[in-house]
Image (cartoon, rainbow, N blue to C red; front, side, top):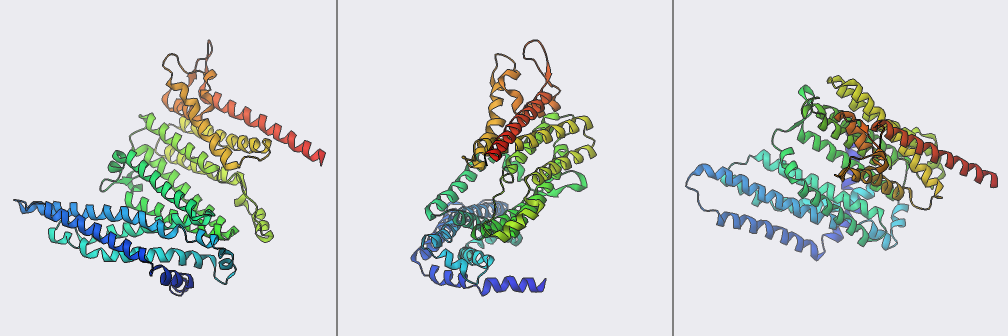
Amino acid sequence: MRSGVLRISDMLLDNPILLKELRIGLRERKIFLIQSLYLVILGAATALFLFSASTPDDLLELPDRGRLLHGILFWSQLVMVVLITPSLTCGQISGERENDSLDLLRASRLRTVEIVLGKLGYALAYIGLLLVSSLPMAAVVFLLGGVAPGEVATSYGILALATILAGLLGLFFSAREQKTGHATNQTYGSLILVFILSLALLPALLEFLSPNQTLGVGRFAIPLWLYLLVHAGGLITFLFLKVQNHLRRRVVYERWMGRLFMVIWLFNCGLLGLVSFSGGSWQDPESVAAIWCAALTLALACLGCFLDSQPFAAPREEARRQAELAFRPWFWCGVLLAGLALMAGVQVALDAPLERVLNTLGLCAGVLFSFAVVTRSLHSLLGGRPRFATLYYTLLPAVLVLPLLSLASEDSAPTLWMGIQVSPLPAIWALWDDTPEVLPDSWSVSLPAACLFSWFGLAALLGALRALRRNRLAGKA
């Protein structure tokens, strides 16, 4: 343990990339302008609050005003930190690529982790300077009261965590894209999308982030802050590994990313099983059906990342990839299914209806494997012309959402002729809502059975066509 800590400290303190970036970057004029603007905004917000707030008649109101000022300073710093940090990392690697110096950096004796730590450390050091310079204004809240030193320390810990996430996001797009402009646009576009989603879900988020909020049930409940901290740490680790993999693609990075995803996926599936009961009881099937629909949608979205395993350019790395089970697409289908089975097991342990849970799990398993066969076969039949990710993530929302448009028709009940059986979401809902029949004309059919039959038939048809095409190409060769 001690040797590992010493190695990390050596990579940070004796890092030539970090020293170069600090010496060059901190001499730029924009660095001092950003710091001045940062402190001016915080100082103006503090001064306006203090001058506009009249002296209260009751001194007991002062703690409330202290908490309000603390919230203003925290959210102001959070917004500025999230906006400033990516600007320091978006051009770190793409700029090297544009200057034709990235290959020289790769050919040096520096390891990939040292390059990433050096590039990221410059942004973290500068944002750390901004946060330290704002401490005198944060201390003003102690004059009013209502805020403990631990709360201030927690708020600065959250700011540090947001800094690392924003910096790694910019570094990720910088390593992936060829030009700095593209990396900058994608980074801030992602941040704007997160901001819009946060505004749309603001009422739910405020209720979700209420004090002493927990997830789970009974002795298995965990604090919300611990859940968020675990996922923030997982996202930081994933982005850090992903940046290294973009710089120098290796089996070890992808192996650890797969392990990290496996742990987070199984943890969340087990937690979803607990949450499905803590949200009410099994007499309220709508919430349980919604959780199963969300879990299947997430599983299908994650599946697309593992179905198209690209070969390595280095023969040694490619040999390792061929020898590892973790690089087989069907292995990840099994991992995703294992997570859904874990969620089902937790629900059954909490006295959920066994027949409904098993039917839902079987439906999800059938759709999961069938969708994998359909997308891979369709990509092969198209000659691999569109990128697999483009084909997959175009087909996925079309399959999940477009058949649901038949539910918007108020003139008549949805039928099989409208394609409602293609989407597995109404089938899951029918299993838990006691409405498993659809009436096309004069006969009835179970909607989950129709869904499975449709997907199995489509998978068998496209799989057979793919096999015939492969045999024909082999015969020509």
